Image (cartoon, rainbow, N blue to C red):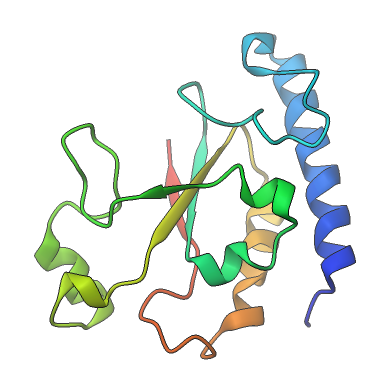
Length: 146
């Protein structure tokens, strides 16, 4: 079932509030910026994140602009700082069935404090909105557990 922009925005606002409440309940207050009501800066940087989602630009385009600002571009191959998706260029090529790393579209990440299975499934359900429409090798969420 396709989601409207309003449904997506409403769900994300609720989800962001629930993330903050879970952090408060666990006394993880040092990572909450109460001045940031929309969550634009709440979930960035290091910390005790349980899940990292990685998505292509086409999925970010479905999100409200204030939410898409929470996502940052990550390298396809893990860099010297440990950021990235794949251990090697060959692994990435094999995963996407392409001949050159340049054929793989950009990857963007966001970390979450605590995500229920239903919430994770909601994020993944957004894939149906773009599935088979971009013509790019990376069209789905990748889920990394912390």
